[in-house]
Structure formats: structure tokens, C-alpha cells
Image (cartoon, rainbow, N blue to C red; front, side, top):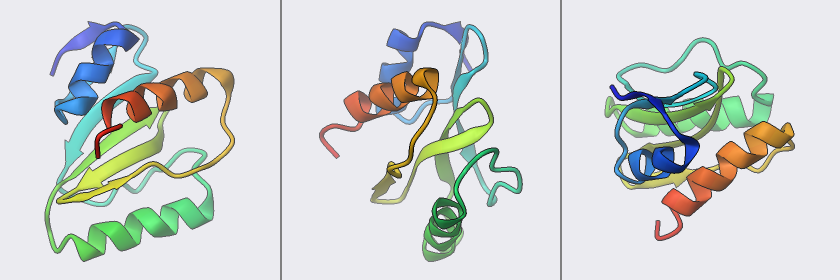
Length: 105
């Protein structure tokens, strides 16, 4: 997994669903073969949606983009999900990177 990449380079990793971590570790993407048990500051509705998406994927891995330990976006099979929620200024920048990367999806 590339570590220490810039947020700008993270867009390409997110677009290709490749694992990465930015230079501060505040933004990362990773493949998970399980439902994450720790979801940081994720809203309960979004956590329920993530769980439902994981169950619907029938065992397929999840590609999760994290900001400060909170899942802010994920993809599984043909599903791409970027929940709408209020976030800090930095997490909002991370979300902008996700939206740029997945604009065509």
C-alpha cells in the first residue's frame, strides 16, 4: 500500500480503488473482506447503510475510504456510496477528492 502520498495523488488511488494512505494518515483507502466494527463518527443511518450494502454484496470485499477513522465513502461490486453528512473542513476536502475520483460512477 502506498503511504505518504499527497491528497492530490490520493484521487488516482481512489479512482482505481487502490489501497493508500496520505502523508498524515488522515485519509486512506483500503479493501476489507469484513464489515468494519469501528466506524468513528459515522452517523447511525450511514452505519446502517454501510452494513446493508455489505450484506447485499454477499461476501464481496468493500473498498472503504476513511477520513480520521470514519468511513466517508465505499464501493462494493457495482455500488458506489458517498453519504451526505456534515464534516470538518479537512474531511470535506477528503470528500471532494472522493467525488472527483468517482465522478463518472
